[in-house]
Image (cartoon, rainbow, N blue to C red; front, side, top):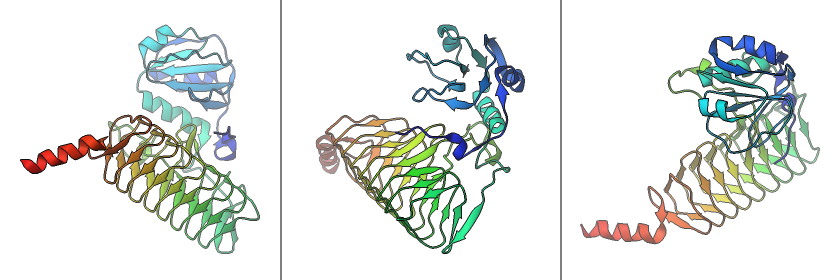
Length: 324
């Protein structure tokens, strides 16, 4: 996965130093250890540590954070006490703090202040701040948003929306598909459109990917939603935020993949399959149609049913049911 310049997609709204960050969320802070007062320029994740940034951590971690100029925000007392780091805040109402800080720092797509400027070219609206190779063909009634990059020899068919995305060469995206839309992230205890968790990542699509009609691929929350090279995605497939899809993977129609699921290389996924979030699927896996995948699956597995089982076990269970 590539590093990306967040400011190409989301305007920087407010320059924060640690001292001004503390004031912004003062009512949420339980304890604090602060030794520095650097300018905060970005948001990090454990996968991509960026200099002069904030990292939000909810669960316990084993990684050692060695990057200079990082401030950690957590609601986990064990993490607060465990980490030997210069700058860390222990807070309550984690989701509210995340939303408050990101809404202050960035003008993102779900902020009413968000703006983009377009040229109307051959019946489609193309952002003045996008970069599309001249060899790529754009259909009618498309929208290509701010910061989007599209490589060589791509075909973008009619009524396609592409936002917050970097697309490589020889990619086909079929009619009525949305790439880079907002992920389904919010606190169930505080729902409503005004309480969405800001999604400030992107979608990255590698070379020679085919995406069918009426698909939705949500952008990452902080980093990437990733589609590996040579992958084939059928019509009416939903891929949620932070999903990582390996190369040479085939997904049949009406499949839904929940957020932060990692799917390996060379997999075949049958139609109308559903994936729980935050699980890992290995390489060379075959998943039968209408399967419900609720836990990790090892390399070279063949599974079916709900919950998905080794296909031999699944067939045995079907035979037993018939004999009842």
